[in-house]
Each structure stands twice: as structure tokens, then as C-alpha cells.
Length: 244
Image (tube, rainbow, N blue to C red):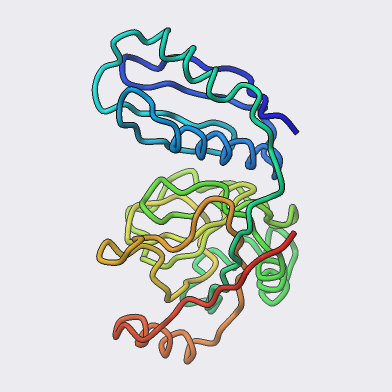
């Protein structure tokens, strides 16, 4: 499969946006990741930062681009003719989640409106293998695709001023984990005791776009045991090689 894109255009004086087809799926993700790899590996005229999203990537330049349209053309030439080969081997991370009602603030609303028991919500949420499409809006916040359609649930009309670190939420057709305390509007169904972002480690976030995530339920007792291990530096996030 060739690396086809919908559009490449300047975004101000210091950025170029590359857009792919609007569908959110594995094929689009592979194109985004390949484009990022090509751009990072080629010697462009200026040092750049590449930020990926579901179906686009943004190239941020450290200083204004002298000739933006020439640079756009150069990026097009870098990507033109590139082929998507065999999928790069990814990692599957196993992440513990406590779905206790003390952590799952919105479990009652979701189970009521979906006519599901708490146990059914937990089973449905922890069954899939999710794909990490990209990381943002906070460092280490994983945007995960693969949520069962029955669990799709809109974000809150009024975001909470404070969502705790580790909160596991649903926002529309996505699920994710808050890596630190912050405001947020996702529906909270549990909490994970693991650290997804630590500025003192290399890399700060072990999980990358293209990797996979599998949640597994834990009791409150196990949750606090793992939390103690994380805080003492004795916990290792379980992962394995993943093959499609």
C-alpha cells in the first residue's frame, strides 16, 4: 500500500499540516506513523517536532520557515512513493484498573442509560485490545480506539474542575487514562494505579502510538498494593510483543 495523503499545507510560518483520509482506523494510523518515521529520519532544513493525531500530523519548526511553499513541496517529495510494508512489531501493555464505585464516578449513569449492570460494563470495557492512536492532551494521555459501540457515551456538558490521576474515562467512542490530576469532561468508570508518564524516566512514557493496551480488573485491595509498588519504584508495567 502506498502512502497516500489528502492534503499538505502550511499552518502559519512555523508549521506544516499533513492530512490523511478522515476515517479512524488501523490503515490510517499506519500511514500517519510511517509519515512520522520518514520525516524524523530525513534531514530537513530545520530541526522539527512531529505531532500525530488520528488522521493527521503536524510538523512544528523551531523557527520561521524561510520559504514555506518550497518546504511544503520538499515534504511532499519526501513522502511521495513511500510504501507501507509489514506492520512494525508493537507492544501490548496490560494495565490494571479498579472499577470500584468509589473510583467509577459515572458507572451508575452509564449502566443505567445503557441498561447494563456494573459487571457488564466492566466486562465490556476490559475485553478489547485497544490501539493507541496518539498521545495528548496531557503528556502520557493515551487516546485509545476500539471501545465497544455499546459503551460509546458523550462527554459531560460541564467538565469537572478536577479529575484524579489514573482516572479511566470514556469520551464518545474513545477511552483513556488521565496520567495526572487535571480538569476533564470524560465519563469516569475506574482508576488505574500505574504511572503512564514520569518525567524522570527515559522515555517518560513507555507506550507509543501504534502500541496496544489491554485492561484487566483488580480489586480495591490489589489496587492499593500496586499503587504502593508504583510509589516505591518496585512496579513494572507488564507488556509483551504483539502480532496482528
